[in-house]
Image 1 (cartoon, one colour):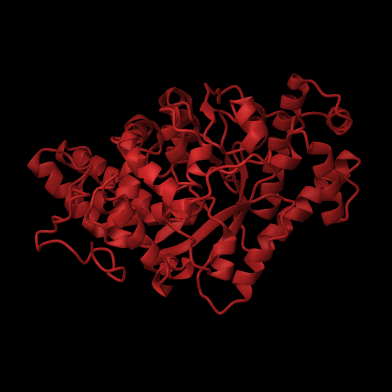
Image 2 (tube, helix red, strand yellow; image 1 turned 30 degrees about the vertical axis):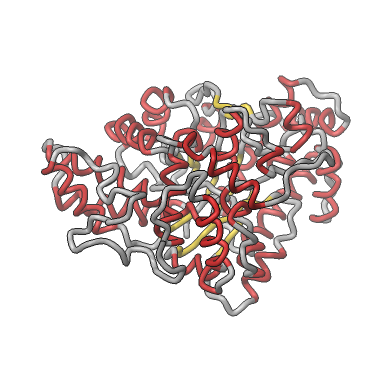
Length: 487
């Protein structure tokens, strides 16, 4: 293993092929020599561009306080549901991995024990994007040239722990080293954004902004919905007992987020349903929700109307709107009760877009001053609905493959299915959508490699000029995300 202070990219021979054992420098590139050479040249032209991370879930407290990360298990295992869901699927208990509970029952707290258990089962991640991201982090961030397994576990733990004790591995230093230009976190309207204020008031030059995620005050089926609306009223000083005051409160919170640097909103609804309801019906549904007497259909209708209201507000305040539908969140009720959300039990579902979005699009679809970025967990929708929709409505853009599709094959399929109809410029580049900080450069590396491989194939098959390919590569890696998210 190399010393902790070695920067990424300082190993390898003159041909650019890495002498390390974890990563092949030509990974994800085409097999035939001509296409591979062009893919490599395209990638070399964009690999060092700054990272725009416009949607993610890193903790702003990391950058505000700049404290060392506690230990390897806290960095790589406990917060990463990509990791522990795979191990759990093979019978490894979440308790044994230190995944926290909210019901007060104990979990494993010894980080070395957790790390050894992770190492013993690391082979379960073979062939997954998680394995590539973690190996990339091990090699490029920590200078590790050993495969993690039961025999190497202690050595690798000690090495990472020693690195984490050094100033060069604190959050701000890693942000700079990763060449991040801007990173967005995600907070709810009930958040006071104190960590963002600390960052803004510090002498550090890193740019960390928030994204406005109002699901907890828009979804009437949440157990805490009524209490959240009360808190929203207190925070905004608006009368949230009536629908007009509720909308006023949401708009005020959006303004508060925008003043703290936010450029986008984020909506994780179960469906993409939109509605345009008469004010009287919206008020009635809102009152039913406050009183806990709303049916599942009525709740979905209310959420659909609120997506339209959020789009109307975006026309006023300029915030980019992101819609992340199609997840059956917290599929296992027992795990949800024991541990809360985001415990790896969210499952993709079929999602309708053409019908679901029509009410909103009928009202605002032709507004070029509105940007709505659509994500999906349903690949069948890419060529059938999403690409045709984005290919004609000025307000729509396609977000990159998300969550279960944020893999090399998912990214490749995305380009193949949407480009012919929507082109490149109705997409928004890449975002990493992660809380695993050290995986951010790895994820962008994968996206840039996949896009360059796809562009190289277009060139060698006569569908794209080589000069155009180099320009598109830079757009996909950097410019589109910056432009689309107004960063």
